[in-house]
Amino acid sequence: MSRAPESIALPPAMRASVLRERGVVVLEERPVPAPDADQVLVRIESVGVCGSDVHYYRHGRIGDFVVDAPMILGHESAGTIVAVGADVDPARVGQRVSIEPQRCCRVCKYCKRGEYNLCPRIEFYATPPIDGSFAEYALIQDDFAHAVPDGMSFDAAALLEPLSVGIAAVRKARIGVGDSVLIAGAGPIGAIIAQVARAYGASAVVVTDPVERRRHTAVGLGATEACAPGDAALDGRSFAAFFDATGVTSAVVDGIKRVEAGGAAIIVGMGDDDMLLPVSYITSHEVNVTGIFRYNNTWPTAIELVASGKVDLDALATDHYGLADAEIPLRDKPAPTTLKSMVHPQR
Ligand SMILES: NC(=O)c1ccc[n+]([C@@H]2O[C@H](COP(=O)([O-])OP(=O)(O)OC[C@H]3O[C@@H](n4cnc5c(N)ncnc54)[C@H](O)[C@@H]3O)[C@@H](O)[C@H]2O)c1
Ligand SMILES: [Zn+2]
Ligand SMILES: [Zn+2]
Image 1: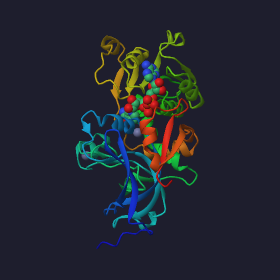
Image 2: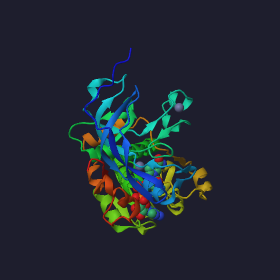
Image 3: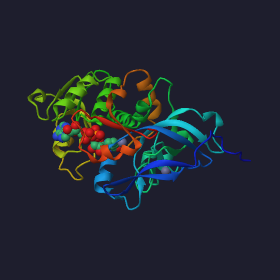
Image 4: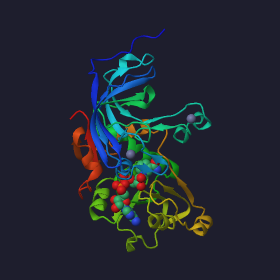
């Protein structure tokens, strides 16, 4: 027997920021969606703007994913549950949650072994044709709406999504106490990996970035040292793990060659599609080279890292926009001080 969905009073319509086609974002009125039996409806408070949102806005596609119908961008989001489907505990209404923005089939071999990010039927917010969360409300399955502690800001709760990318990367590198790591790129992802690597025990965390201000920020956020790519400070040094957070071939090649024998090179950056890699170095030093594609089972760890103060996400949220201005951080070149722009759909 199913019961009526539990909810608090909701308006019939909501505002949503819709990417109609490449370079065109329009504020539209949409019906507030109703949760399926296994879903919750979240009133969205904070959404981080990601490089992929900017890419879809500017180019209308990422690889084979093409925006050929209007789509709502945004996938780093947090808010409050305001309604639940028939099979969800009604006590969840009112909970503050961080959204893990993916939906997997739950039955394929990848899902069964917990690697649900590799599910061939994965659906992900703001990846065509799935709508994201630049909207006043969004739906997610019950178990992918992760409750966050009262003391955690909505900005930090939203940024548990890129933090999850960092956790997935550091887990793959299998680093331990006292290890040294090198990170190329001091954008939000590089700065997050630096903090996570420290939390996992790395003692030396060196970050490279051509932009001085970004290097400065990284040092305030977990890096023990920052320098320009190819700086003489790196000469003769090797690292237990290298993380690429740029997607730039020269950074990947340089980083791999600085990994010590038996170490790991984790390619997180998505940029150049084909790269010429130093295979003889990889072979003779048994470097474990791998990529990561998003994450699985990271939210409990992410919540713990932030709640315990080991990772600071609020410091990343530098710029703030209301929903009507969501196009600004997609369109304009970011200010030198910008690390992460946040969109606040209730403003
Ligand atoms: N694999 C995944 O699941 C996943 C998830 C999220 C993001 N990403 C990717 O991670 C990358 C980083 O994301 P972000 O939001 O931090 O991007 P970002 O563009 O804000 O940061 C990239 C940084 O790299 C620096 N950089 C450029 N060339 C460099 C070089 N040769 N050496 C060192 N630094 C260099 C830039 O100055 C910039 O500060 C992007 O490519 C993004 O697509 C991957
Ligand atoms: Zn993102
Ligand atoms: Zn699956």
